[in-house]
Length: 214
Image 1 (cartoon, rainbow, N blue to C red):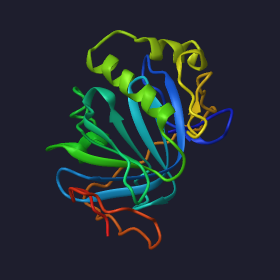
Image 2 (cartoon, one colour; image 1 turned 90 degrees about the vertical axis):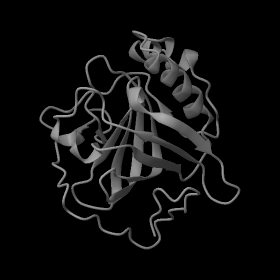
Image 3 (spheres, one colour; image 1 turned 180 degrees about the vertical axis):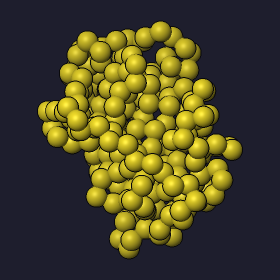
Image 4 (cartoon, rainbow, N blue to C red; image 1 turned 180 degrees about the horizontal axis):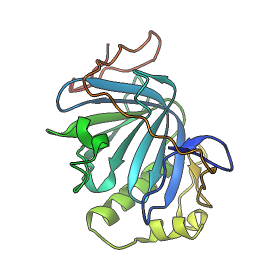
């Protein structure tokens, strides 16, 4: 993570050839790790041409849980749910990207699928969804660079994105740059148990029970 030079807020350091597409605030995240343990946090997420990255803000289950990256290449069974009671959420599963097995940051995700939920605490989701699914198709078909990724890189997202007035997602019309010396990295201690969420976090029970936080 690093500080955005324009907003001073934290954002994920981009990978080679990665372009950020949008940012969405007021998000709850939760997941169940393959080898046991659960993570949760409240903050925002970034959709890029390669990843969805959740960044914890004012609430997190543990001090060393600051962010969670979901490579689009490894995103499986994405499902957007609109419950009658409760906020909309995106569910799916992921694994570490190929070649990252020896990266200490990927260690908690080894050994199986990580089931995750991104809960949209307010606002619509049409702008996000209209960009996510084409990006998934592009990435998982292993295309070099599709039209959305190219538009993001060139600052033309406003020409290709469907903008839903009820969706508070913020499109990137220029790519963020990190303040010099602001990059930070937090080591995740795998064997440290996760604390239970504080009361009033508003987490909703999930129908399959894979990542229920109570």
